[in-house]
Length: 493
Image 1 (cartoon, helix red, strand yellow):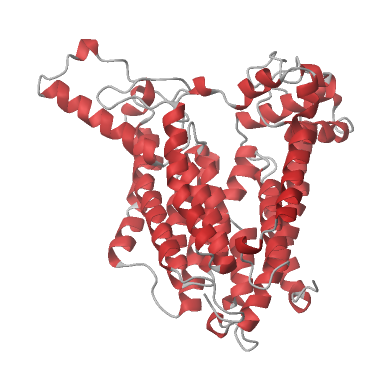
Image 2 (cartoon, rainbow, N blue to C red):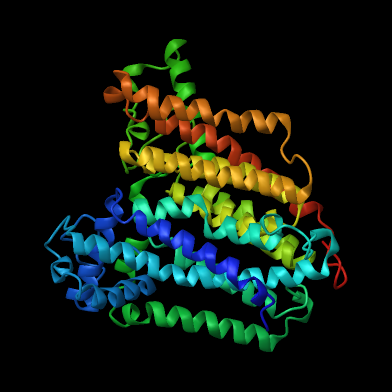
């Protein structure tokens, strides 16, 4: 498919180079323990035979990602040897020489090329849709800053959450999201409206799809099946003993569930209905990764979270099967499934909110109600990532980047849809993030409780943001169930 973006390649290249330059400026910024996690995986995959990858335990940061990512680390390790071979020694725990930092930072920046290419292809398909749908207003006379294609590229390339998680905190989410977006773009480009035509899904296509899935599975897990190591691999990939919630509570249903249990236990003690001496210690607010028991409400098991996750996404899947609504409906279903997993999954990381925010960016530039949901979800979801960067020198960086992205999101989408998008109640809720940030980032660290109750800012951030994320999830489901079925070609859905 010929790209309709050729005439716009100049501004897209400028956006991509600009954000890459910002990433380079962050090379010497703070990095989390994930930096050492990935250094150790480089060492393990480089120094050990495949048969020992999922058994090696010299470091506490054992390999717990799927095999394809392990092979990715293996490939990177051969390049890393040209920077500093000492980083590839397993016993060199917490090794972070300047050359090591430079290599690992550059490895994230360079692999983001996949993400950039995926956005270009994603935007190419979008431009074709904008040209045939008058309601999307992609006209030649419109100022560049307010064109849907430019807004979408900026929302994706300059996504605040992805910048701080990958290029400060340190992870490799960019190229993985690139694979996701590129897959969606290719699906859209292969069809007139991007929908999945289930009724014409022949047995032959089913066999082809099944063969692709089975081949991918075989390539990934085949060597470990042959080695008889699948139980060990699965024990690493699904470490259920880490507990329901991550050390930094993700802003989801279980965060709200935890706080309700805590409030009920406090009321029970105050009313004399519970014996404080018989209550379990407050492990779930200790900021540690471990199992804990709820006091009043029933404790949640991994099976319960699996059932809740399936129940949260099945309506969207059935709706897409029986009432396909084109490419937008397909993408909306992806967003709902990602957010459903985030809301109800076991031991969810707060960074997983990006799985919903990034694909939702496209829906935000082509439908007013989706833009409204995007502004609420992206603002609360991005703010919930603030605790990841807790050092003083990164405070102005995260505030400035958050403000720039948020201001651009609100102003550009408001201009695109020619009017205010969020209601007064929603705006009041979002503005509440400002005093919350002041309390958590500036005031609380100066109080004596900062040393005795260090988890309080994390708890407040998680609970407040969970309300916005839950509200966004409900709005997305309403939008999915109220959109019309697939319309004729050329009409806006």
